[in-house]
Image (cartoon, rainbow, N blue to C red; front, side, top):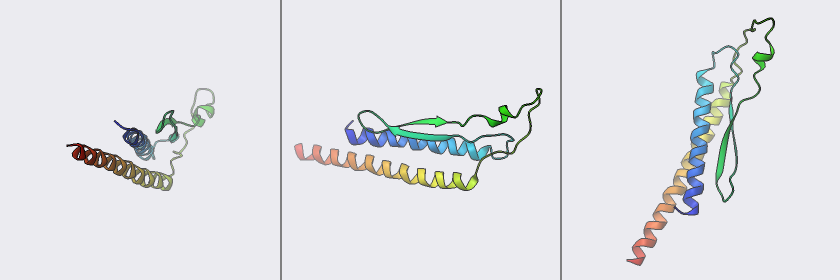
Length: 114
């Protein structure tokens, strides 16, 4: 696997993670006290990216008084989740196109050597 393939595959993994986290956020829109997570991408040593799921501190736990939890609505912003999913989908397709182009270039080089 070449450097372009490695970078594209790492991008695919991060965008898959981002879509899964966003889907979980949407699925829990009606869950009282739910705090949505986000995926933070960072540069990987040697190229590519890595992703880490970040969940803000649970504010509902701070609202507990005498063992009783105060019911709070979900903090999921559906508009933000739609934007996240659209951008992630576009980035996924771009990484997939890079992977496909790298494979086509590799195939062309192999056919020249024959």
